[in-house]
Length: 149
Image 1 (cartoon, one colour):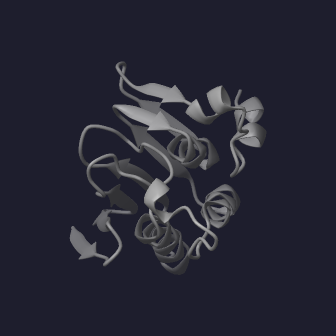
Image 2 (image 1 turned 30 degrees about the vertical axis):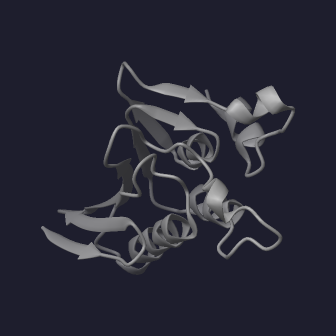
């Protein structure tokens, strides 16, 4: 078992042939630039290592992810954008699983929906709170949700 801590609030741990990416961005695991870059690094690591067969995305703390980091909203969001992360997860040739506890809200739910499978605690809460403001999920959630079978 090896551990790599990225300067991105996402720790990568290899468990046999599975890569585990753990989001740790207190207090709500917001999808900051550092988290988005860390998730892309996890996909890069998975795709670069033929011995790895799957990626599990999980998080520390009380919830999976509270969604976007509103402190980063402004005229120019830093790359990578959440849409790029969603596209890479969606296109990944290896299985990607979201392990959800607490809440997966907004962009956090969009990340989970882009994965091939989602495993949620019985107490997990999922939602697009932005729709109460008349805003559609902006990173593919509106496309991924109807595709679930």
